[in-house]
Length: 200
Image (cartoon, rainbow, N blue to C red):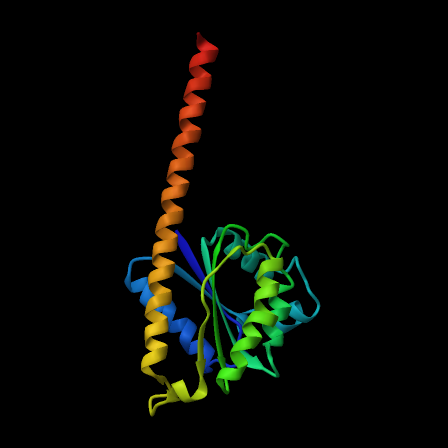
């Protein structure tokens, strides 16, 4: 099972990028296959011109399709998620998030920006087929303070939310894996029964 992380920040050292990277690292430590994609890795002209056939975008779509869960991180600007993330999500098929666990991760100047996730980001995720959206991990600038090593220090409440999100993702991926195994076993049994009936 695979979890794909998508960082939708135009800045390489942003708080949202740091949160997403922290989640990816923790999940990897738990033995969960984690792949990472940064919106800055997609050529700007491919995004702006919606070049669906570009190698970078084809690879992005394939990564989403192969993932069982997706973590999507973004800063909140002007009461909305980043424009470059919107450009990226617009390139996905309409059912790209069907039957996938989705974890939104966002940062903003104050707690008031949290509402932007509900009225701006989540409707787009739902439009892409998401039906299993986990509770958002949100942090303000005061809860993620830059340190001397160019990283960030978590406030306790953010650390708790991160650990809760990791638990939910790990449990959700394990549950999905069990469902897939049961479905595959059932299909194999039906095939064997059909072959036996045909040979009788």
